[in-house]
Length: 200
Ligand SMILES: CC(C)(COP(=O)(O)OP(=O)(O)OC[C@H]1O[C@@H](n2cnc3c(N)ncnc32)[C@H](O)[C@@H]1OP(=O)(O)O)[C@@H](O)C(=O)NCCC(=O)NCCS
Image (cartoon, rainbow, N blue to C red; front, side):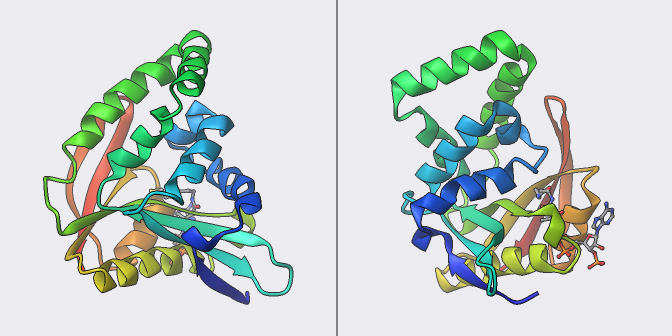
């Protein structure tokens, strides 16, 4: 696999639907809210001053293979979704009436996430790292996460956190290979997650 990692902020906006499509492979809450939420989330994330990330692009074909995203304030990335109030209310009502369990999970998760950064201004969260299924198992996931760690260090952060569902062995393996250790295990609505951390 020959690829280059580029900063997510420099991505051509026409490629964001591909990022959103890859993200839909993640079994987490954002994907369950649906594609319009996912696309809007990444459209806003690339404009968020404090968030940073990377995407991998295959040299020969130009195909986007995966991406990673970090922020010192992950809850702000979710709040970005509400900036266009009309859009947000329409979308959320759709979720409420068609998938009420997902709606209630979203409420629980947004409350849980708020306390998670432990008011540590020197910490960042590995918010997402996802690889297209056809490129998995070749260490691209850990390379994308490692790029977040290097960039976090460069920006002066001292610690990185990640929350990973207890069943997600591929993510746990990649994250632990990058030096994270499990600090605690907690419940967030229907999700059981490990909270992992690493010094930068
Ligand atoms: C997590 C993810 C990014 C890993 O990407 P990747 O490029 O395959 O990662 P890596 O190759 O760097 O490492 C994955 C490790 O898990 C292992 N692995 C892969 N699938 C596995 C599975 N089903 N069960 C157990 N281990 C698995 C791989 O063998 C590898 O370990 P190794 O290097 O010791 O052999 C990818 O699986 C993914 O996109 N998953 C969906 C999104 C997601 O869950 N993201 C994380 C959210 S917290």
